[in-house]
Length: 86
Image (tube, rainbow, N blue to C red; front, side, top):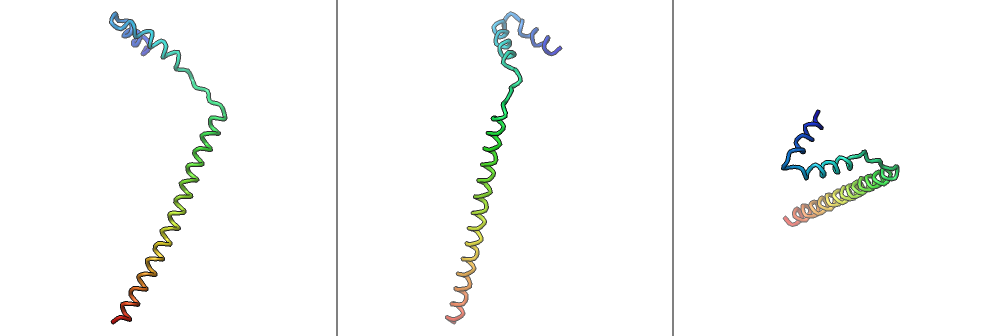
């Protein structure tokens, strides 16, 4: 039903050149068959990205912990020196 309406619109005199274009598009609209290597490639690529993000995130967490420890050390050092100064 829908296809008939579409062809009726295409058959109008001012749109005769569009019929060829739509027929070519319909021929191109086939089910894409992908091999197993396609899925293997994209699985490896996806896992690589996820593992890289985890690696960077872990490094960031370690760096943030070290920065907090260093800040605490300097804060305690400053507070003890200020107490001794008074």
